[in-house]
Amino acid sequence: MRVTSLDEAVEEFEKDAYERPFVIPTETVYGLAARVDREDALREIFKIKGRPTDNPLIVHVSSPDMLRDLVSGSIPEEYQRLMKRFWPGPLTLIFNASDGVSPVIKGNGQSTVAVRMPRSPQLCRLIDRIGVPLAAPSANTSGRPSPTTVQHVVDDFGARVEHYIDDGPCAVGLESTVFGIIKGRAVILRPGCITREDIEAVIGREVCVENKAVGGEVLSPGQKYKHYSPCATVFLFRGADWKDAMARKAGELGERRIGVMGSAHESYGFTVHKRFDLGQSSQDVCRGIFAGLRALDKSCDAIFIRAYATDHEGLAIMDRLEKASTHIIE
Ligand code: TXA
Ligand code: MG
Image 1 (spheres, rainbow, N blue to C red):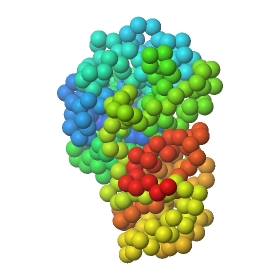
Image 2: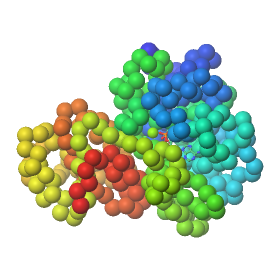
Image 3: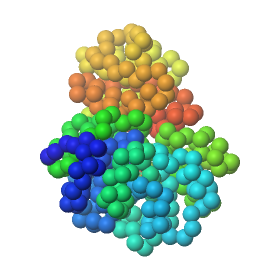
Image 4: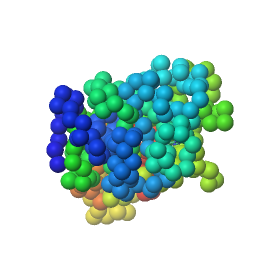
């Protein structure tokens, strides 16, 4: 197992080093990457993560030109506007896939392919040197919180992955927004830090959010699986009186060690075993959620967190918190 910086990976580039899955830093979360033209390596991603094989992978390109071999037909005008505004960056778009895209990437059934261009120029340089796009899901064991530092990935995969590329903590901290035009409707399949409001401002029409499997209809296979779960029991407090509700729940839990994710300045009416400061701005909260869940999980039996308003980044924050929660207290 070796850990290199992104600069080293680009400068000391060896073609053979990229034949097996390897870990890449992106602005959102760390990814477990493989070349799109190496089916064995793509299959190995699913094994290493314990990922169901029907859950498709996101493909990372170094420029919009790389779409040519991935996409069938012309690129919708609204996508062109979104790419111009948000690429490189944390926006994944759903395209009709060309015949050349491996079924392993498409989750053995989808006719579409999800693509994004990561923000880091150095990562894009590496993709250029490799010469083909990289398919990469988040680099966590399936069901666990996504990784926002290379240490999180090492904690999950250890020596099962040979090459880790470290570029420090992720700047965004939540996975990309997944957006598609599906049967003419503009739909967010997974909210992220490019918000519904951001997308509506660019395409000039209403965007719906379908981030949950409703009535059995699943637009994005990832919606139906358990997500972001630490081993500790996670309680999400949604009511306006969340502080009182936390104190009541702490009383019920008795001796159990309770961790709280929230603002450092808050005081609570019970003994907090460990705190994780989520900071002030919604960008801070996005950056801290997964790191906080992983940190508190090391020493707490229960994790308490309050709800956030669901406008702008709040929609992505609440999507991840609801999926991570064992209990939602109204
Ligand atoms: O920020 C990110 O997107 C990170 C970094 C590494 O780029 N990647 C990531 O990948 O979060 P992953 O696999 O953990 O999540 C991809 C999500 C899944 O929910 C999957 O079901 C959905 O995107 N997805 C992928 N391809 C799709 C497709 N063709 N149609 C609908 N949903 C798709
Ligand atoms: Mg994931």
